[in-house]
Image (cartoon, rainbow, N blue to C red; front, side):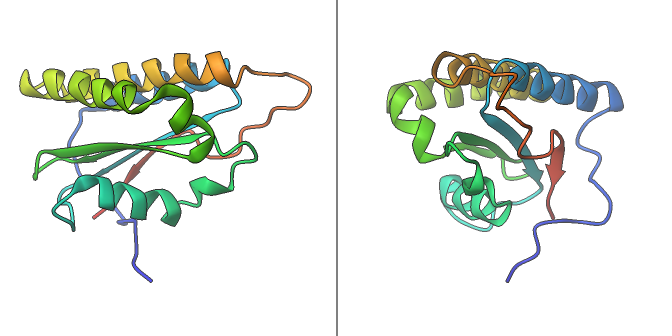
Length: 153
């Protein structure tokens, strides 16, 4: 088994930028039973970042959400690669065009060196999508996954 985590998070972001991403995760999840996670590492182990996002998604056990409505935003900073991997409960509801457009949103922001802004915006967009299909129910919903940024190697 591979190790997903590093002892010390790389300094890809200033503290204010990390807080912006964390706030976006919390905001996105406030109105949905869905789960959004952000995974950031230096290098992608695969040619296709979607393959790495798949590996990370399952490594973080994101498929274990009750409604299969977890979404991973994956970024390899030094390789300048990214992907969004959505579980089966939400992927098809949005369609491939939606996911491709969200990747384009991140790429546009990244091209302007606005990495944290791009990630935060996509997380908020995904939160709106999840809310439309999996609205929050105070009686039954629970936070199934941590609301944090996961830093890889």
